[in-house]
Amino acid sequence: MEQRRICPYCMQELEAGEEQCPHCGRELAGRNPSGSLPAGTVLAGRYTVGDIQSVDGEGILYRGVENNGPFRVTIKEYMPLTLAAERGRDCILRPKPGSEVLFKTTRMDFADLYRFIQRITPANGLEAVLDVFEENNTVYAVMENPGGCPLQKWLEEHGTVTPQQACAMLEPVFNGVEAMHQVGLVHRGICPANIRIMDNGRARLTGYATVGLRTAGSGLHEQLYEGYSAPEQYSTAEFEGRYTDEYSLAAVFYRMVCGLSPVPAAQRLVSDSNPKARTVTPSVPAYVSETLYLGLRLKPVERIQTVQQLFRALSEREYAEELSRSMEALDPPAPAPQEPKAPAKAELLSVRNLLAGIVILLGVLILLTLWGLLSHQSEKPPEAIAPESVSEAASEAASEAASEPVNENVTLTPDLVGRDYDAEVRNNRSYIDEYLFYVTLEYSDTVEKGRIIRQSPEAGEVIQKGDTVSLVVSRGPQMMEMPDIIGQTQDSAVQELATKGLNATCFTVVNDGSEAAGCVVSASEDAGSMVEVGTTIVLYIAGDVPADAPAGPEAPSDTGTPAGGDAAQGGVEYDTD
Image (cartoon, rainbow, N blue to C red):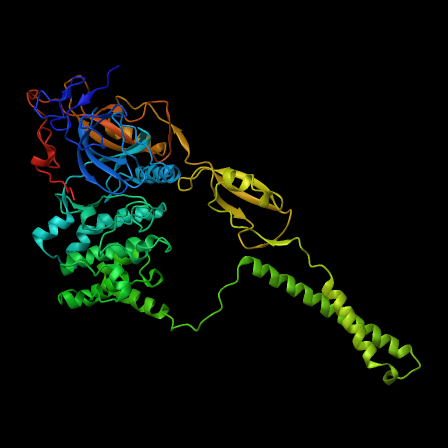
């Protein structure tokens, strides 16, 4: 069966093999450069690829169309420039010789990232991920077309805003980043270029990427944002956490109220010359200036740690002042140099030395007790007993006690949390020769299938060799049978999906009169199929039947993107930098 093709420009149906749209007259051939997907390529049987929107070190972002709607989407293709070889006309992506392993692992990271985001979107403030699938030896993520204007361009046109306006505009983004942090994700790319201002003045965050793209020296052609990327992103030796996003959020807020970006973190690490916000713009309240100073600290441990703390401190003077006092109280004076913490093996040796010392002390006490008893029974006065003999006997006893073997069965429990049980633990001789493992399985939406969620005893606890270590291993997300919701009203279908732990996002499609308005025409998953709990199901809802069917292309959508004509010439402008 021939796949349905849609013109990515006017969204009218194309015949098989057509390289020019008969409706809008646009040529498809040659629009995208060699090595990328040609315009008009159909993916997963339901998405038509359009023009390239942007390229980074991780992949290519295309404009596209969902054929069943039809409606506009954006499609991110995993294609790392440093790891992928040039693809042929078959569109199959192949890794460069010698880069096969890194290509595969980073491709898995890409797929995992977008699948996690798909579970928490559509969420207020985050660009929704609609679909993730594998094809052409790579991975594709399909996202909504958010429309709006990049914050960077919006600020160039409107200038600075007050802190109150910045809070109102960015509140959805703060909420979205908090939702990411709750499932263990870190964005790492928050900046004006990845924030879009919608028609209602509220912001939405885009620009998802793996840790490799947003960390210098990772093996990918990194993409860092000067002034907005945190200091720890400039080295693979530094650990990144949610405080990395706090730095970027504070930097974006700084730009909005001050009119200029913070000094780049790499430069600040050499000589920190970033001025406080109040110094740049005297109208900025003192508590906002101090909060941004705390959010932009170079050392992560000294920085505001959570999204809630940062947003509340930027919104409320009293809370900001209290947070500032508490963080200053936590700042200790310069500590005296300390010995580095000994590794676990050294701790084990100290336990053995302690046991040996106890044995020696007991031996000396026993020897002294025997000597006292013998001295009372002997006719010779105590002075007659040669002190040297007692000393020699004590030394001999101490030597024998010290030479007694220490209990070699004492060891410390290894840290197994987060490891792959099958690949790293179950057949690892260094573990199975010393411990017995009792394994139970548990569903988890945050821990990858097969990885260890928790253990007992915990890592570092003293344990005897041969003792049992209990492990809880992830079964991955819980699966649920997709209900049959075709024909139901939108509210009824959304409610039924919610009872099964499934999310829903709805798109209205053109109704030629054959469907009941407001009811589900189709869904992204077939009834009876097994889907992960938390998955977002795309519902296609029949629109109202027009009095007169339109003769031309579909009317422009409320986001400003025209259904007909080139998207670049419509009401929505795209950032192609």
